[in-house]
Length: 447
Image 1 (cartoon, rainbow, N blue to C red):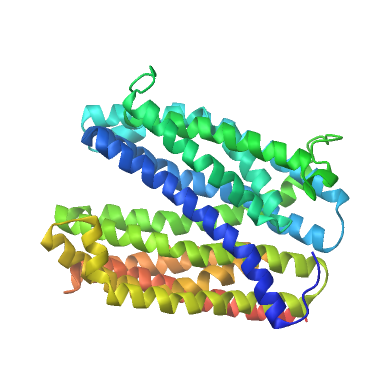
Image 2: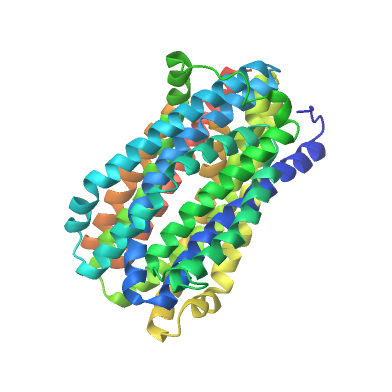
């Protein structure tokens, strides 16, 4: 990575890194969206099964791929320090971890899927679809985790457009496979929602194949020769990766499950309230792709600068990322406040649900600023390889402060259903403040 000296140069380079990440994240989001949409056209029962299966899978997947994201700051710092020979060894250790995680998840799903699904009050037909959907996903576990390692490696080199290209090529294929396997076209079996799981598994293999071909044939990946002179498992290096990756994975798990927990706690309210909550959560999840992408870019940029011992540049990229996310948050707040009713109307025609959704959007607008601060600050801290304290802060902010606050407000005040959203705002705000303090402390320490 070349040193960018002026603020305009740094801003331009950050956009070059972040924009492909954003497109990649939106494409991944749309793949899940089309799974749900196409299954909903097939059967309500199959839609419910896929929704339950996805709800169980996403937190697990997020946490485990978060562990593999630990490769990004390590490789980024090695590249910044011009220690390219060490990159191959760490990527190999990442592959070993990925295969191990895939085996653990595969065995875990087979052992606990029935007991877990039996704990949820579901119709037998829905339970069967959810189980088969998850079992189909198992076919793609190994390529999914191996690709996560390769994507972390690719992104760490600053070549985020390559990851974007892979997903943009694969997403339409996934949609076609959905169509063929859900509805049973071209002589293929009609699998319904289970077909969406199989389509995803096949797509994971395809994504891995494309990534391997690119890494083998295209520079700067080919010159690093990560598929040559294979290194044996190293407990020392695996421990280094896990020391970075596990806190990242647990932090992402804490963030993901807090929203799932709120959804479960809100199940005591009417169907209209739950529907409005889900609509508001779905749209704000799409908006969150921007600060999330900026955070992922911040990890790469800060990692490069720290590896090169350019601490002042690392500080600049950290706060430039935060400023960019805050600017976008002002746009997203405006959208949520000015076009609340129009957005809600896209999801449903039910007037009462629209009215409730409009109210939820007001609270969603309030936590846009907190999201815009905590996400890129967290990304910058990962670039410094400072992840353990970040994880502890996430647990305290979301689970010890945010969720209990929401529960108290929802059950013991007039805020009722909106109390949980206020709890999310409190948790995210405290997270943003404490993480910012941590980043400032770390930067002063590394002057």
